Length: 321
Length: 251
Image (cartoon, rainbow over all chains, first blue to last red; front, side, top):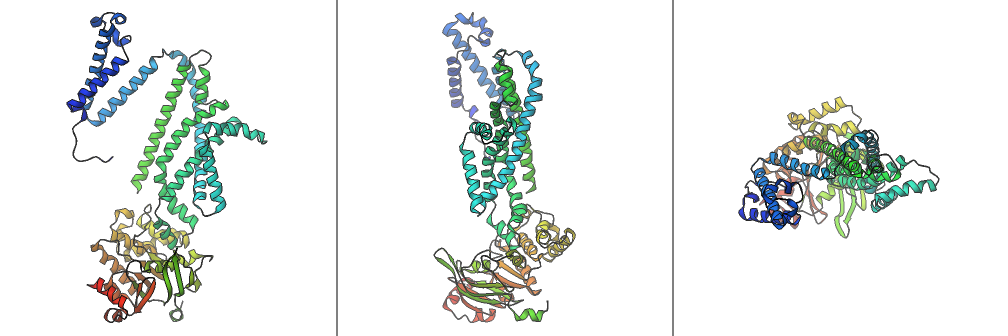
């Protein structure tokens, strides 16, 4: 959004909004009753034994919580926007940690297995995703050019391919490739068939992205190139594709991030990647949450790194033109 | 090539050319010969087919009937080597169509380097010489969007000239420019005309036409209504439609 030069009053500083917000928050805390949590214990000097405090205790706890909540918002609203963003991030992250902490996690259990998660699981996940991304990009370039060509065969094959692989759930594709190919006489290992499924599926999505990117280049660029006597392949390579890259990069970055997470689907083939290890390592000791949360944090960290790389590439292309 | 031989044959000739867009006939029975070094200005109301005509000359548009010969080669749907023909015909567009991801210099070097097989150094030398000729050598390392419209159009002219074309086509080169930038582009074109280039210009700049053209062609409704020397064309127009048009744009 493009910011106006005239600033509106902050919503938080309008009494009506503030009152409405306070009431809503109070109702929320009241409805979800935090009396029997750590907050009730804190307030026991006022309300006595939390378990016997009844409606009065519930009201006091929710009132105190909502006052803290609203004061917190007001305090944040007085800071500069960068500080605001930072504080809100930290607070939300702490809330997430509190959520994780509430499962009574055994940290030593995580410690003893995180080595395997990273050395085997993270490595396999990155390996599968990276190879699939490269293949998917290659498929997408060929697919996009085929879809834009006036060759009937090329168009038919490319459009059938995108239709099929965008039309089936990825999990189903993973099964079909892994279990289907051996019946045709091709023995494939789990990892190659997982990579094949991911590449084909994301290649189909990215074909559409690349096609749209190529089509968004104005017709005048083709005409000027043709008028100079360039052949179509040269125009595509030197004029059209370089210009469509800045348009293609943001949605392609999203595809990369989505693929990294969807690589978890190949865990059904027994590949020792992050998701598979997260499911199996905790099973024997009934410590599911430890491993699932660990895998969650690793996936999250990876996508944050990818997002930063994506932002850097976007900046680079913006500078150039 | 010897000039006297060249002069005997037209560089471009059209015989009975017809073109349709669906049911709409854009060009009607066009017959035209353009001789080496001739300067032609094509004018006419919008929708008269003048841009279509000039775009048929390097086959950016296809004609359906009749023959178009460019340097003795007939342009048709299944022809080979249209790119070779196009290398000899420069074209300047209303909307410049510079390559935005390349610098001014790279725009000018691209053609000679990529399709004429001229090495980097020589292509660069030639590009700089032509940028000097259009009076913007100091902009060589900038990107097109950093330039004004008039400068961009002059780069576009230099880019075409780097291919050392036999003919230059101009498709309303000043129509997209702010008024104060029109003259700098026209000056470049006048200098090019003085150098002996064969030029075909679709334009409404009647001052330019009067000064440069050997022949002015007036089109309306897809037909060539009238063609004459500038003197006769402006002072003694024959056709009613020509008179109406001249009244409208010269008033």
